[in-house]
Length: 312
Length: 299
Image (spheres, each protein chain N blue to C red):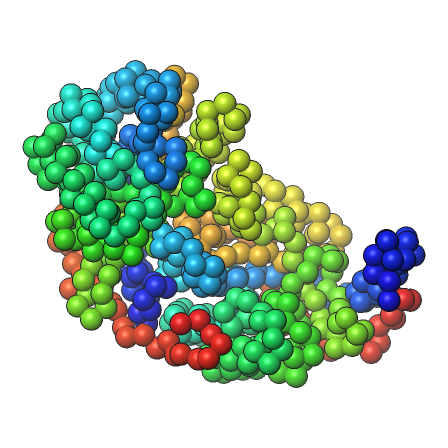
């Protein structure tokens, strides 16, 4: 950058389109994130959210239809799962995993880490990691902190310690960064260049903000807008040779006619030649090998000056 | 002076309205240079994450803004250059310490740097306000190597004029360029008006200006392209003015850059569409239609 703590998390200029390399000379990276959190409040899932009829639908019929559709089209995805959901529904998670999808963590309860004190957050990251590992048999590679529909910001939250905690717990990537629309490095310490690879997320491509938003029954159902956002962004990123990631949830997009809406998207976009569809863990592995931080993270010291009456 | 209905009845309110109206001075018989039918100003509010930081918003909100500095601004400038559009980058002074490379790249391609406050706020204390404004103008001038003559802010007009600022782009009070006086009927500045209906944040930014979740209507680029094309055509028929307000952290996303390029290419199918910087338009207005020659509305 000039690096500036609490302002920026990565370098001053993003990687250029022309410098991005995908496996086997492919044109564009393509990720699908499936959000399995029922949480509607910052505290994460609770009795009320677990009993939602739409969530029940999402974890059963909606999910099975999702898995069928992914299998039919040969798509592999990343499931962002609150660890408690994996513990409650281990057979469901095993079925998803057996179909070739990645199981990543979306908090212990799909909660907002800003509601936790530092010690509690550290405990929960460790606990959630172990919980997922015991269900899947492997340590998770990816951690998400996805937004809930009633959050004040449509970004999800991390605390000042979250990324360091993820590094300490051996994560390969953080799944919902907004500082780029390609994978990028989230730096937590300028001097040591301590960093974690971060995959891009944008709420404009997340069905949570378009279907039954902010909650079921409010009538804010805008599938056409969501589909056009997916299609136009996909086309633009494909042309640039960059990366496109969409976020879907079976309690929303898995429902009947909405599932159909994913198909024209697939015909229009996901069937393009030279598309590299991969899980988050595979994208992270490719990226750190071919665009390593040692050569691609270009940090420069801060030139920020301190003045009385100005921001620190 | 009576300022409320309770103090002075409708007449007090009428006096307030008349004073407010009298501050806005239209330019009579305004014409663009020969061959120009409409001016289109692409104006970028380049605060990146600065406002998010100022409001102490959480890390991923700041990242949303950071996108504008490390990705969005570059893409928009590349697209403008490919389409021979000169943009005006309204830049908080502090951005010079965060994204100097992008600003140098903008200046090198002939885009204009204009003021957008020091830290995206105007301090209430006049001494601190002048301190901030002076720092912003100095930081931007050091990069642009030319005097900064524009602002998009609510800075005190007298302070702005003292530092050489001659135009503002911070109102929707009229559709065409006009002069605006301060509260004391002094210190006129040229206003190059924008309109919220051609402001990207209204369509694409979640929770803009504190709006609640149930009020969100996030748009798609195709729909916005048609809204803005209609708006442009209406102004074109009127021989008007079109000031598009964009934020690099919003409009720098790939699908929106493509949408804006299509909008520009559609505009270019019509004769007489000029895409100068705000500074170029302001200098034309100030030279051809100086304030001293404008008829003041009666108070």
